[in-house]
Every structure is written in structure tokens, then in C-alpha cells.
Amino acid sequence: MHKVMIVDDESWAIKGIRNAFDWEKHGFEIIGQFTSAYNAWEAIQANKPDLVVTDIRMPDISGLDLMKRAKAHELDTEFVVVSGYAEFEYAQEALRCGALNYFLKPLDVDMADPFLAVLAMHFSQRSAARNPLILESLTSSDPDEIKRYLPLPDSAESCYYQVLAIDFERADREFGQLLALEGKPVYAMEVEAGTRKRLIVLMAEDKACLEGLRDELTVSRPGIRTMGISSISGQLAQMSKLIKEADLSASQVFLSEDPGAVHYEPKVHLVKPCIDEIHRIVQGNQYDDYLDAYINGLPAYFEVHRLGMSEVVCLWNQAVGILINAYAGEWKDMELEFLNYAEIKERFEHFASLCGFLHDVFASIKQGNSRSLPEGDILSCFNRMVAYIDGHYEQRLYLKELSAQFYINQVYCCQLFKKKLGKTFSEYVSELRIKKARDLLRQTNLSIEEIAVKTGYAEYYYFNKVFKKHCGVTPTKFRKS
Image (cartoon, rainbow, N blue to C red; front, top):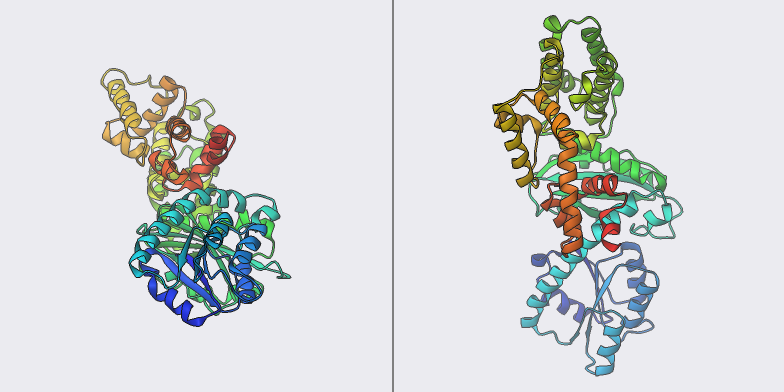
């Protein structure tokens, strides 16, 4: 919801503005109304609303003064003027100060709804442009850069932070429907991280206020696929770490179909028995005796111990390390590489798929990896697979599904990509998508979010990372250059 404040020294005028517009219908929420411009200015600084609807002539501070102060303080707040003065000079000055529009009292109700629809479109486009910038700022290492977008008053002596990462079942959900923060000494800033994903930064001067939300956050809510909840920190420089913790917790959906609310609670030490078992199988060459039982038992072990994405990353990277050390000659063509949690989610559909790939790798090693590459029909199938990828790069692509669709063992697929194309399956798909993204950034005015979706990335939070890894700069900076 777009946050709105109304400022007018006459209470009847405020009531008229509230009633003239169907605010909720168009995604606006009135968070404050003031007959005192002084009080309004303090609230604007504290809450950083998206829109202020103000009279132009008021005692002490005028609507023009509010606009000038907001601009001087670099607040990202828009203004609409509703005034009883029809002089052209007033309207001209208001528009010069950056007002989106100038209305005369009494408001024409027939004009109100169409204008609000246009205004909603404006804020939607503005949000699409701002979100990548906000994400870049929040994940930077500069506290001043991070603070630019946070609504906490500058007068606050101390502050504690917590981040929520929420995956919605639909794209039209709003965080405001989830937590009733009104009246609580907790500030919240929402930023889109994908078509169905939101990052929520919670801020409070008292740590106990955030701790008191724990029970409320864990209440099951319809429409939410999963909610990842970070730890609490009093250091602004740890914002990037909190975002990662929340995103890791929200990634519990990788292991469970209905994870609900998940607090960040790493249990990496519980992965050690799984790692020890891999050592035992590999070193003792005990594939026949233990392999199937071990792989089939991994999902149950993770579920019983309530392990999450941090533990999945640990398991994968430790397994890769063991296999690299044991089979230096064979591993390089099997797409065994160290991955972070976002790369694992991009490569595997779910934890069972990851376990299945490990099983196929072990089985290939057990059978002996000295076979020559398949020829004839299988190479033809591989070429058709590559053509399919080229034409469907904007879709979610998983090697396991593709190998089954084109009748090729997925380990053979890994070998074929390396032998025939000189790169892994993941590298090929990423390079294809980023090339398309660069073209769209150069040739179109599509938002970063729209380009992310069109090139196969549901979360442009992750798209930013992949793009920067390939191009050295973020999509926003690439477009500017």
C-alpha cells in the first residue's frame, strides 16, 4: 500500500479529501491527518510517506514550505495540492516545487477517481524503478547509504533491526494486511524483491519491541507461502547479513511444501553425521551397501532435525569437496562446483532433486566413468535440448527435468555440456539469460523487475547478484552507463 498523509488547517477539508477519493481501491493507505503543519512535518520526517495531500496556505508553514523542506531533506515524498486559491501564481509555484497536481476546493468528485488511478500507475512505475536502488543501498556496507531509505527518525539515539523475507502465493498481497503496527513503536519499510516476494525491514528503538513481535510473526496467515525471519541486530552495518538470514530462512520452501514462518536458526553442526557418511561411502567404496539407503534417508533426517537452507549449502559443498578430492579426474565433467544458497535454488527444484543428482553422480562413479561420450541419437537429443533451452530461457529450467524430457542421463548431460559447449549447464543458461538482459537494458525502457522476469529470474534480488557477477556492475548501473 502507498502511504498517504493529509495536511490542512481546517478539519472539514481533511474529511472532504478522505471522502472524495476511494483510496483503498487504488492501493493507498492514509497513515496520518494533521491540522498543524508543524506536526505534519515531524510525521513526514519520521514516516516518509509516499504522498502528502496538502493545503497551500496555512498558519506558520505553508504547503509550499513543506514541499521545499522535503526536497531539501532529500525525502522521496510526492505532493498533491488542494487549495481554495485559484490564482495562477499559486498553481505555478506549486508545480515548480514538484507538486504532481493542483486541485481547487471543493473537489470535483467526478475527477477524483480517474486522477487516483493515474496516480496509482505513477507510484507503481516509480516503485519499479526504486526497488533495485533500495536493494543496492540496503546491501551496501555504507551505513549512511543504508540509512537513506529507512523511516526511523534521525533523532533516535539507538535502533534495532530485523528483516522479514515473505514469499506470497499471489502477486497482489500487501504486507500491511499482515501486521498491525499502528500504535506500536515499530517502524517498517517494505521493498519488492520479486513479483511475489517482499523484504520488510523492521526498526525499533527498543529491542524488546521487536522481540515482542515473535509470536505474532509466527501466526499462520492465508496467502503466504513462507516467511523468513532474521535475527535482531543493533548495528546498521549488519543489514546485508540480516537480509541474507531472512532470505535463507524463507528458502525453507526448498525443503518443505508448507514451511510457514521460519526463524533464522543455523544448525550446521547437525550436518556432520551426513558428511561423515559420505566419507565412509567414498573411502570404503561402499556404494552397493549404503548408497541408496543413505540418499533416501537424507530428506527424512533434515525434516526430523528441522534443518534448513544453511545446512543444505553445507551438505552440498562438503560433498563436492569430498568428491573432488577422491575423483580428481572424473568430477570436472559432472558439474560439481561449490554453490551458495541462491545458486542451489536456481539449479535444483527442491531438496529431493539435489539428493537425486548426488545419487546419480555416485552411481556414475560406481559404474566407472571411462565410457566414451554417447553418440548418434543421444547427441541428436542433446542438440534438441540446447535448442529448447535457447527458446525457453525465460522459464524455470532444471537439468533433471530436461534430461528426462530428452531421454539423456543427467550426468551424461553434464559431460556433454562440458565437452561440446565448454561450459556447465548452469553457466550456459546464466550466460544466455544475462546476454538477453543486457540487450533489453540497452534497447528498451522496461523496468529492472520486468527484465528479470523476461529473462527467467522470478526474484530480481537474485537477478541483481547474477548480473553483477557476470558484468561487474548492477543492472541499474549498466543501464546508466
